Amino acid sequence: MPLSLWWRQLQAIFRVEVKKNVFNRRAISLYFLALTPSLIFIMLVYFGNKRNLIDPLFLNRTFSEVYEGLILRVVIFFGCSWIFINLFRAEINNKSLHYYFLTPVRRELLVIGKYFSGLLTASVLFSITTLLCLFLIYYPRGYEASMQYIFDGPGLNYILSYWGISVLGCVGYGSIFLLLGIFLRNPIVPATVFYTWELMSFLLPPILKKLTIIHYLQSLTPIKFSEGPYAIVAEPSSPWIAIPSMLLLSAIILVVACLKVRKMEISYSNE
Image (cartoon, rainbow, N blue to C red; front, side):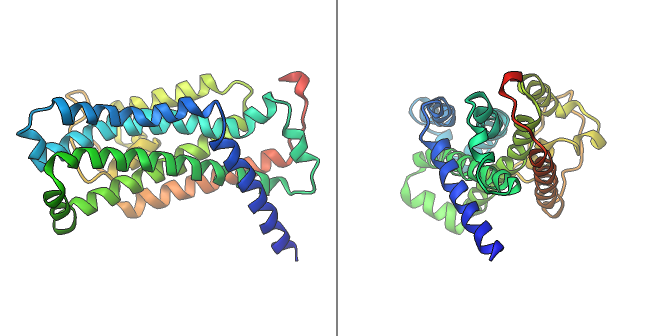
């Protein structure tokens, strides 16, 4: 009986939190952020060199650079920070978290329900961003040439790889920002330090690169390119290491978050 009850409670929390994440006036800026990369590819389609726009090597190279430089490092990072930090921090700022704590629901279920609601929101939103940009990059080649490249060439592998990386990025970044939102009253400074750490990962020695999320995400990209003359080269992690590492990190962080929320006491006067 408790398991079925917990499952129903988890579903209820999940549904409520998804609605909060999606139907929120503050989410409008998040939607604009998610659409930003597509504007670059729209400009490329209409103002780019027509000869380059039918060259699959050029298109794949261009998409890879924009994906790693903008979608991963900016859109997904800051989008996840907005979604997951606010899962608890917004409730505390709005003085509404105690309503959850007054209900007969295990606090661990509250953490898990909120995390997966944020993960669904981020994964769907940034998957749409990734797939829309891929559509725009292949659009100039025409329907027949694009379908042939996707199903008879490496195109489908590229699409699935970038889509999977986007979801995995939401898994990893989401768990960290959820924890920051629980532990810290003002997570802006730690989030800025974390962003700097991720942004400057190309300067880190190989052993420290493995302490960044971006290293594992970049290791999964189907197209690799140089990060510049000052970058310190490190061997990419295999998918058998990168994917379990992200999942294990998120699981550990969720356990820590559950332990913290289990002992949390609400005192809005200190916020």
